[in-house]
Image (tube, rainbow, N blue to C red):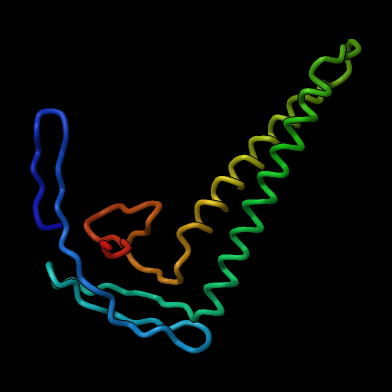
Length: 141
């Protein structure tokens, strides 16, 4: 982070951009350490091959689509069962169905979000969660 300006209702942070100079390997992954151009702190990066990146993208997509399908299926089941009268003393099936819907919704959201941002580069920070002073970002176009 280069500067941090605190105003009455918001904070403006400005960051310096530095390229990651680690070549993508033919197979597997390559781990390398680079020095931050601003603070000279050593940062560890992992770069995946093109094939490994594609397989990760497919895994995230399958997880996301399976989660969306599960959420839709459990949602329809909740509406089907929700209107029925439950006998006295019988367990209400809406509770487990609601948990299934929530699990499907969350896994669909996480899977599709990571599928969108998967680029095969790991390091401090990520496009989804970047805590601290270092983060990975796409270069400005």
